[in-house]
Amino acid sequence: MEVRARAPGKIILAGEHAVVHGCTAVAASIDLYTYTSLRFPTPSDNDDTLKLQLKDIGLEFSWPVVRIKELLPEMDIHAISSPSSCSFEAINALASLVEEQNIPEANIGLASGVSAFLWLYTSIHGYKPAKAIVTSELPLGAGLGSSAAFCVALSAALLAVSDFVKLEFSHQGWQIFGDSELELVNKWAFEGEKIIHGKPSGIDNTVSTYGNMIKFKSGDLTCIKTNMPLKMLITNTKVGRNTKALVASVSERTMRHSNAMSSVFNAVDSISNELATIIQSPVSDDLAITEKEEKLGELMEMNQGLLQCMGVSHASIETVIRTTLKYKLSTKLTGAGGGGCVLTLLPTLLSGAVVDKVIAELESCGFQCFIAGIGGRGLEISFSGSS
Ligand SMILES: Nc1ncnc2c1ncn2[C@@H]1O[C@H](COP(=O)(O)OP(=O)(O)O)[C@@H](O)[C@H]1O
Ligand SMILES: C[C@@](O)(CCOP(=O)(O)O)CC(=O)O
Ligand SMILES: [Mg+2]
Image (cartoon, rainbow, N blue to C red; front, side, top):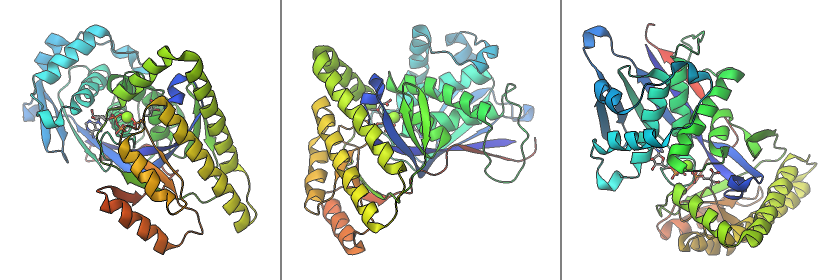
């Protein structure tokens, strides 16, 4: 039997970074997914390895399970229901197991993802041989939450066939988990995110697990019901960056200027709350929508200014902002910044011709533009083959 899971990426409409420091943020899932499949070999396969294939990247990693046993301490399988953090010793052991795979220098960013895989796998299935295959529609390391989607899809596939979660599975395509399973997936995915991000807020794994649009503060989520159409242009600057390093740099700035940064974070908190209120308030007509869009655009610009104060903007992001401003459109970075993806609010009454012009101008700078569906599905799983 094979289990598959898919988990969406996300955009953050307001509050990235500040959310790591306990402030409110607003995020929505997008209709781009990371897929994982998991299969255990049969005895006749005579295969005693754990394999991870990153299909679209064209890389495959393989560890004899005895090698994993040598380096990683025995997991307490009863701890599946209460995920625990990876110890310092385990982090080092994972790093050794990953190092032995000689990841090409050009893909070295994947090392933390591979460590997270090994940690999640061995925590849930111990030293059992298996093959996991991962593919993703998300750009990796671009602010759209690929790390969280990876951890959520992986945790879900692993838990779906664990002794702990006994699922009534049907063979009818994508299904959703119950509330308690979703909660457990989200907790495990958060542990995986810690390995990749260092100090995640948990917003990315939460929105990837539950989908929709959410308001998130200190681990608590509130579902936001949107009362207006919301269209965002996503521009990938294609400038590579690393969330862990950016989150750490904001924390360092916070240590240096704690009062000033706490004012910056408080301002972001107010922006996120106001943005959520606007999105949820009822609309009567086109004029009301236009007014709301103007307010949202202004809040996005204010949030971008504060992200710049935190030191996470980038010349490429500023280029997108300048370009879209020529068309009176509001833009902010999304995710950790430092490059990666940028959001531009596309008002309902904006003509298709103008949108095409903006996209053409941005793409002429070497950026890549797309419009994704926002606030849709969260995690889903499916089974195939005989059990
Ligand atoms: N499909 C994947 N396969 C393996 N690792 C992944 C995958 N998706 C994400 N990752 C891991 O997450 C890292 C990117 O995460 P991050 O820097 O947080 O950016 P983002 O989450 O915005 O894409 C990658 O460098 C890799 O380690
Ligand atoms: C910067 C931050 O707020 C979002 C990071 O998102 P991404 O990994 O860049 O997609 C960090 C976090 O909330 O964990
Ligand atoms: Mg991430």
